[in-house]
Length: 603
Image (cartoon, rainbow, N blue to C red; front, side, top):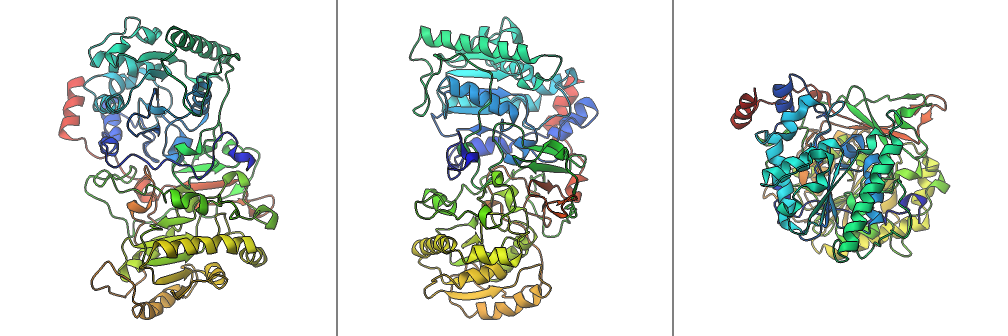
């Protein structure tokens, strides 16, 4: 087991996103116009909107939540993971839950689904707590749905904003909180559910302010004693999860615990959730930098140069009328990929016995191992008529959790459409690690390694066995072309394409369409054009995990890796994702009629 997996389970355990037969995705898609409301109510942008909202972390299946944790808002780690409470505060609360035996049956939600600029201040009060605020009404709908679908035993509010949100919620439901946020355990929790109790703790984010750490530790200990008292009074209240146990025999220590892999989407950067903050915002909110276990916040002590800064263009971008580029889809809110499924997860991650990935670091891989591996597939591995074996061609995959999601993948998407293929494809990336800095000798060594070939043969065999209508393999780039020669592909037709960034790629792709048109694979369009002019499309939302923003997977490459100015080599410890310039420059959309009426009534 990797040292970076400790306490987190296995990386093939993942969160598929909201169940598509429930209302979670629909509720999240109804997020109000945060930007417009913030500006109308306070006169300025109050939310860090660029990397979108983060709605939840934890369980969304029916009857799977015993503890509901409510916070203030997320930060940059949450923006990258598209999940709540995945940074430093999340790690503190994970340890808190582990201590009382709750290792799975929890759900994290927030006061605001967008991060705020600065601190939670009085000017945000109407937006955050007034019953007429569209943000409050939306939040209450989400909280209510959590109660409706679960038997919630405990609600924990983290910080004053969350405590105020719980008070607002209880009062909105007809209950009362006689002590206000001073002691929310006095709220009429039975107004939520007869078995529900409420508890508040101070926000861990205040630990560095004026010696507040001791006060935070004491507050957490008092909260733990209150929970123990409730458990002693009723041993059947809040039973531990099957994988957890109560730890009251040991004194509670204010510590952090890593976030389980099962709380993240498949293929996410394994560095996130490691028990503290792993990223920082840069470039006036236009980028977020992810750093390894050997890196530092803000790259402190390092000298880095990002040659590519992801300006991008709007070529190929399109959206539904209600969508916003900096949010997940609103109109087609069920368009997201739930992951490859149980029959694929271990195999693709090198988790099957005898089919482990070789030691890439020993063979010359440079990227820090704490980043892990995983962004090796995209598409439908059990429903494909075309298999695309593709080289890594950008750093975007690390941020999307899916293969071939940058510029080259966006061009390939248009090429597949020219072939008559819309959904019936699976993309398998050559190697689950960053290979863009490899020289040819390292690449050849890894591709010719018997274990590499063994794993890819097992993947290919399973794809063939699960897809009786599979007829065609496309290779995309020199590494995939080399690897496929070592694999037994049976009677599948093979067509090799040059990497998009090779100089003659367009003419090569155009010439190969004629050969492809003669192959009898199943098409999804009755009369494909078999003509490609080099246009860029975008990665379909149904290929990407839940929570991914509309601008991600569009506008060319979004990811970048810097040069370390000291070594003049690609840094092993830092990556960035950039918002495209055209999206960064967007003004807030106008308020809806209902939102404008709410603002007017408050003034």
